Image (cartoon, rainbow, N blue to C red):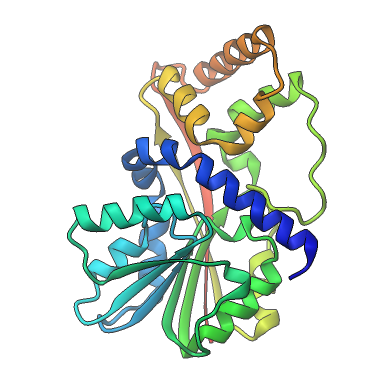
Length: 281
């Protein structure tokens, strides 16, 4: 594996493992937030009930666990780089008594599964973080059976996602952040129109469709929003790490100001938008 790709892979692994306690703490909130994208993915897979589904970047288990619950004669294999996230997924499977869901720690760009092993593939909010999206597409195409379906979701552009830009735009005003390298993993790496469609088409996928899912996420209060961002927002925490207490306080105060400006009626909601791209082998 290329040294740069291997370095990114290790960074991703360490970061998701580090923030796994925060994801466990806020799992109910995060899974409700991301549920509409998972539902769209499941709808687009056209499952019959006996498939073997690969859930890529399964994290704490979704949408893999929900998919497994819809497969009375099938099963789901959830894969992720971060072992600590998969421990949470395994625990969630036990709590929900989902017995046809298994996990495996592996890199999507270097899958060890045999070719044509899976009937369908799901991936919710993982693609933009893969070290090499090209390698991921090639591997996913390889392990999918002929006529099998794939459905993935990625974040839409920053102008449609106040839930993350509300805080990040303030941070950028006070902390100098190096510009991301072209093509580097990041939240909005796949937001460019046609980006995901092109990636899938290049490896052979056909009948490619795209839909946008837009709504709001309710944080209940600014304090809760701030706490969640500090617990699960890896890029946010990384950016804030070098700030002194005075700068951190200013960032919090200004973020609260912008948060409340978007909720003049006293609510605590921010908008989000995601893209769901589906295709067939």
